[in-house]
Image (cartoon, rainbow, N blue to C red):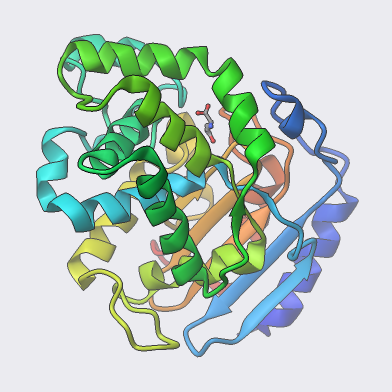
Length: 309
Ligand code: GLN
């Protein structure tokens, strides 16, 4: 079996030499400004050994990767009742698509497309002030990443809020079907802010460990969620974590994964490792272009695909 640290540093070198980087997200200036030449990778194994290289300590906007953690938190609050509000089928559509909501009576296809994540955020918000709900989400991230310095990038959140017309439309449309309980501006305020959490690859890899180890953080032995719940969150990540590119990601990488338009991907190798990669350039489906290629190489070299060697 090749050495993990060697594989990680080889992949970082290979990715840095590639001319094809994809396009950084341009819908807000804060993301459009990010240097597409950056690349970070961090892998934390079952025994706590971290192999990390490249720009693995540069914070980036986690964007939709936050949806894994809001789903986890909401399931903890309302349990499987959550699935009355949100489906768990792949959408085969872009992350901000409106069309399917009409056919499904305002119920989003899954918790990882924007509509689904907004509905999940609304569940977390119920019974709280927006500030409390957001504090809860941020503290959960800090707890999982074992790092109290993790913050929200307020400039990113403000830009999202100023330009998020499609998300406003999705929230209002769902509200018309009774799928959103709180005032849409409150729900969206919390949603835009959790998407604007900034983290490094190292922090994100640590935060994802419970998903790789049956719901437990192996460093403390503490249970974050039941094993069955971790298994199910992984299943939804595998089938829905990359929007319209979920099939391609499963085909090439073979791991549950969740992408964000900031160029990050959190991937889970069950029983083995939690992996975070960041390369800001995106492919046509809005997923990190080099991030996916790097993960494909990693799982191939280490034999980590859940589908076999
Ligand atoms: N904040 C972004 C949005 O709502 C998140 C999208 C993403 O990361 N795919 O549009």
